[in-house]
Length: 307
Image (cartoon, rainbow, N blue to C red):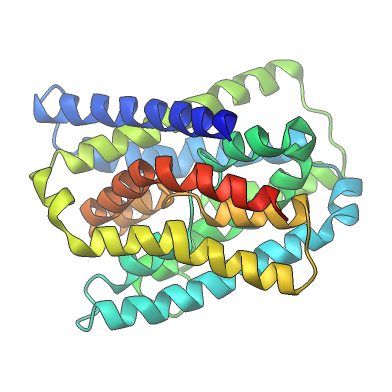
C-alpha cells in the first residue's frame, strides 16, 4: 500500500508541477491569451495521435488481442455503462443542460493513461502491462469520438471527428499491429519522445485554462466536489461489485476497478476547449479529483488486493 501511495503521490506531483507552470506562464502574460486554444489543437492533431500509435505498436500483438479479448469487451461495457449512468446524474444536476456534457464526461472518463498506468504497475507489477494496455485501448478509441459527442451534448458524431487525426491513428494502429509492419528504430525513439511530452503539455493546457478565471472559484464549487466523489468512489465501487458478481477475480478484477477509480480525464479539457464549452469546469474537476485521489487511490488499491 505504501508503494501505491508513493506512486500516486509521484504521478500527482508531476501533474501539478506542469499545471502550475502553465498557470504561472498565463497569469504573468508570458504566453498569449489564445495559448489554451493553440495547445489544445496541437495536442489533438499531433501529440495524441502519435501517442496512440506508439502505445499500440509497441505494446500490442494480434496474439495478445485474441488471448485477452475479454479485457476489450469488459472495457467497452464499463465505458458505455459509465457514460449512461453519468448522463443520468448530469441531467439531474443540470436542468438547463448548459453543462450537462461537461458533467457527463468528467464523471464517465477517468485519467486511464497518465495516472492509471503507473498505479496499476505499482499494484500488480510489470506483468500487468499487457493486460492494462488492452483494457485501456477502448478508452483511447472512445474517449475522443464518444467524448466529443458527450461534451457537445449531441446525438451523433461529427464527420470531422470521425476522420480526425486521432481516429485515423487508431485505425492505422490496428493495421500496423495486424500486418506486423516493422517500424524503424529512429521513428520509435522519436515517437517515444512525443509520447513523453504529451503529459506535460496536457497539464500546461490545464494551467492556461485555470489562469483564465479566479482560482478560488474552483475550490468553492460544490458540483466539482460532487463529480469528484462520483468519479473516485461511486464508479469504481459499482465496477467492483458488478465484476465480482460476474466472477472476475485477481488482476482481471483489479485492473478495471483501478482504472475506474482514477481522477477525471484531462482529455475533457482539450475537447471542451475545442468545442467552446466550459473548459474551466473540466479543468477544475480534473484538478480537484486528482488532488483527492491521493486519499482514495491507496485505499482502492488495498481493496482490490483483497479479491
